[in-house]
Length: 98
Image 1 (spheres, one colour):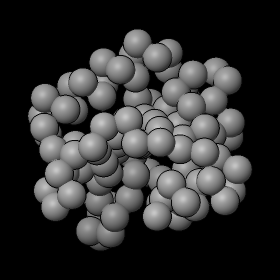
Image 2: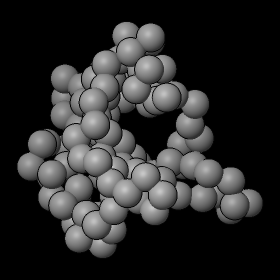
Image 3: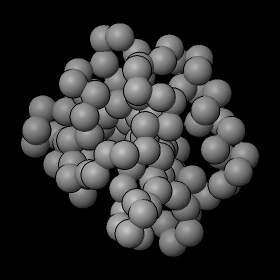
Image 4: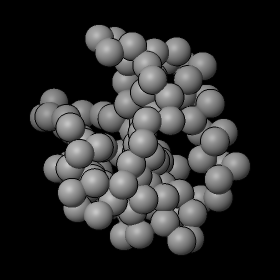
């Protein structure tokens, strides 16, 4: 669903790593001209789904994004990794960013 939304908004995406469809978390990589921002699933203070800029507020280089992703895969071997072209570094799907 998110991939279709991204494509319809002009932000093509692809699955980089398939995780378990029932148990895996999701990391979203937003790729722009200045680097990559990694978003990680989380919950806000009221328990609602949200996304955290896991690599910080500014884009990072590909090596740092890869390091973050690999660390998360070691923690959650069922993890999904999805990447979008996102020049504005905003997810092309409805998301609350923390």
